[in-house]
Image: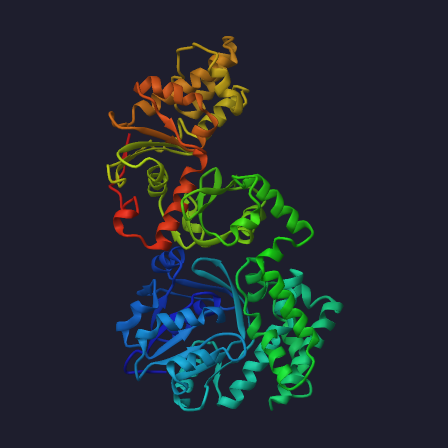
Length: 619
């Protein structure tokens, strides 16, 4: 379809639905602007665009990617597509108040019955369109959607038939790029919305409660029978609303659902991940209309109430079985105050910091005053991919997390947090929250060594890193200790009982291992070898720039597990270097501090750390 002027489309909500529509409308020649709240996802889309895989295959790049809807105010949009969850609609409508114009038409690309009413109330019925969509997908990365299925066509229409030309135009654009969409009148649209909602209501709550994928639910005769009866209840309610379906509608629904694929419906994922659900607009709305006509909807009521009960954090935390045992073990290990009942934190504003390090992922939850409530560490690249999800699930259930921040090596590939920051800024934020003023921060991690210089206002003034070689880092110590057959956890105690004064000559791990073997053949004790390893690390750090005359604080996993290294560094620099409490979690703690600051939007001078830092200097 040729247009003399590009149609301008804004899209709010870049989940699977919004992403698919964004790519296809861009492909259709529209000028598409995106509103993406999540910073990780927003940056990834700006850098690399969006990609669709599997059933639908396409890609597109976008020039206009905004953090808030208000930034679209000057774009003079033709269409505004809302592809958000129903429970986000009030907040979205408040934010889009400045986008109103006579030409703008709002498209509700949402699931559920009556979800368009709030939108029509804000923008007017004559400028509101609704879509019933028959595709689905899953985000496999911040900017990639694996499309699970597309069972054409989609439907679009004006909710009161006042702008059928706009519905036809939108349908033509999408159909022209192989996303078949039909423009329908308001009565047909209502029928298609009910049809799609009945399909969603029949399996979404069931999958959420049972933890079955659609394919698993539809391959079991017992659950298929349950799905069929949920559909029949809803059909009876629809008929009393003058919505008529064909005699083989139930059979059609079952055939549709069996093609749904091996994935969790959106509502199930929301419940599993302890997010609000749209149950009130699915089974809950069918129940409400059933009550209107005095029709019993026992199965839909049961599904709605079970989802609501499991959404309640106090009840979720007490679910019997394996999940509850996992949550309890994680809490028992991670709670800082073991005497405080977990329920105490569910009504307290909390903030989460995640440090995705090269060796370990560290998580810290703090309260509004910056007190650490929960700390947890697990291997970053372990075979058990579920372990990290279990910890995040426990945090979501046990703490009222208002804002979160990711940092570390893996931050750009982790998009379940609100913001991302560098390790430099997070380390500075952590130490500055406890010790304001000028300082050096020495951070020895699994793969690198950083020295961070903060000015008297707690801003990062400069920082220095070791060269690309991992000498002196946690990985170096672990490999050398293993060759020397010394337990990493015993090294500090062993070194403290030695007066040996010769360091390893080589910082290369390969050559250092050979040198260690020579020491062993020469009969050096484990105590002398441990001290020799520490001497080599202290010498390595001594070659980096550590400004004299100001306090120095040591953080990182090496500081946590090798306290004797502090003694060696005190001798090297002739000063008392302080080790932060729980030094391994310092960067995660700083990320939580920055999450709190971002959520509360303090004045610039209160943030403690500048968002930009000077160029790095290496030795």
